[in-house]
Length: 304
Ligand code: NAD
Image (cartoon, rainbow, N blue to C red; front, side):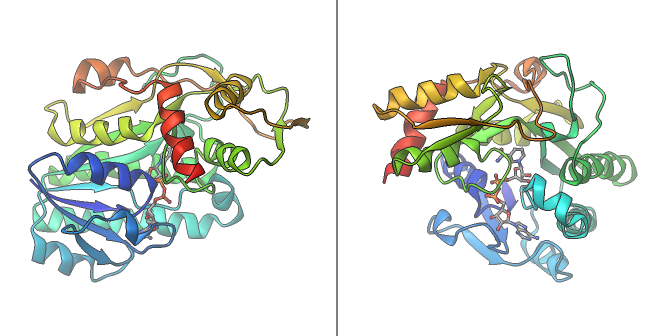
């Protein structure tokens, strides 16, 4: 398969490149290196430094005749989207439409889109199912939800197949601390540098932390599934409180954090767990890496 990975130089992209290297496929990465790193792209992978909003994208598609696109490139920061919704929508909506236009004009068969739990907003029931109401609390969540709707319409109008993957909080090696799931990489850095940690609220708020290797695997499954034009949550379906996360980290590192508890952060969701039943049933997704194992690998990376 001839695949374009947009945003492939980033954190999740680096795990996807590792995973796809085991498969028989030809890969091109297109990335503007805004938050990505060229060192994440192995030798032999075709790299194009370009913004997804660039009007020359169509030339890239015409020349390379991609069969499938894994679309990761995005403005990924919730706070940045609130500070600058125009920048967020330029990257996440306009940039994606540019990609979708190129897909439909050059006969790309399928696009796999990286969406997010942020599309749901603050839902009180857990675990969250794909057909729950979507009511994003940030422009980032809104721009991702808007793209999901564009995908549905491109499918209807032009037959472009799509698979939408809504990720829970992703963590792993090579993660920056600015993006969505940054809490683990922030904690890792503090722990590795023996610095104090402030927990907002009582630490009982929970998240669904999923290792980036699972995300990479889910993207491969999404490229190959027959159950297309669907939305799938990609998660562990396991609730971990911030206090439990800290305890596991301390066990792995063999040392204690100096912890202070601060005021809860405004708008912080109390519980967040995504059901992955549908992904397990329809695309063969399964969780292979335990939180302790994923954290151990991530900690080793940050210590280095
Ligand atoms: P990342 O910032 O590490 O990767 C994003 C990549 O896209 C970077 O390499 C960046 O340089 C590139 N990029 C950004 N804007 C671009 C543009 N306009 N043109 C070309 N390239 C551009 O972030 P990540 O965590 O690897 O996220 C990958 C995708 O997964 C994003 O779409 C993000 O919204 C989504 N996602 C991430 C998480 C998470 O917890 N990390 C959760 C849900 C969804």
